[in-house]
Image (tube, rainbow, N blue to C red; front, side, top):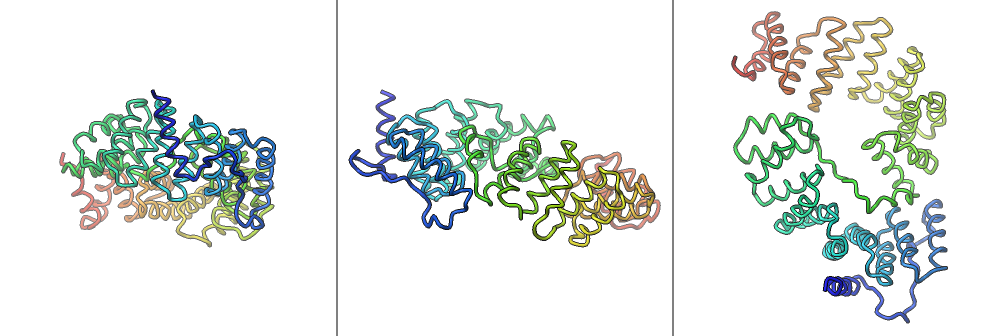
Length: 444
């Protein structure tokens, strides 16, 4: 009975996606329109997958691989055609159907995309990540009740995924079910090791429930959402990325989220395909440096094509520090600051160099400037750390002490904040910033 239901779903899906109804209709291998404008590396890949498909036109796996190569390089309309053909030949292909759904979503055919994803989940009903993705799409479409149902299904299948908990809570809050959402949040925020984006939701939920103090405490730990949950359905896609922009974005994303070790092969590939991409070159140099290959890391920087940016000079400075050449490091970080004096990390690097060259006053200046910049963007931990380093090298200015007290309050380091404020007031009893900060402290 289940198989009959699935086949009915596939019939509706394939007809809506333009699938062939007769085996006598000629099938054409999809390639990007205006193929002369396709990047050579992408064209080479698509020629390979296309040739393999041409030799086995009735093999659904070959259709899926060609579709995956198109998908990986952002040719989503052509990928839709290839995935559709794969499941026309073999309807029970959950991965191909899942990828078809995502390709349809990418080209803004949302209704067909959700239908395809539901069809895929009909084949793999225990796949919790698929239910989570469906919930995300339904929320984006404003289908609040359906999103909650899908998110609940994902959470029931695997309550251990923090991303699923995030999506479930989001769906409940969209439905104004704040009382129900809060305990699900507090199960993780209470252990004080939750990701920052969970605190963002917690702050919103507390605020809606009128719990102002808890909302502010959660907001101090909040951060932007992690928007790319890992999903094994796409595990083969990164290896098929050949486009300059696509491989650069993926390599930098992987480096940021999973670290340099996993990102290194993609950074190498991205740098080879797009040697003009400065941030890829910088990340690749950093990856080699972290592996202890300092000479290779330097060679990557020396082979720069294009105009250096702040990140480039910061990496050159960091590499020079690792090579114990502080004079070169100072020269490079100065170039970074000249390009962008508002880069707090560059100020931190400059402070470290000054300290190790015996210039405590200059180190103090840079660390306090770094802290000021961190406070502006509410990076309280970094601000506190920079000021802690500064205080080890001399007396903080009153503005520096005020910044330190603010960071300590935001981080709920109340005893330390009280001591810092008392120090400011002993120097200047009428300091308005210190008085305002003192008023934020809980009464003893």
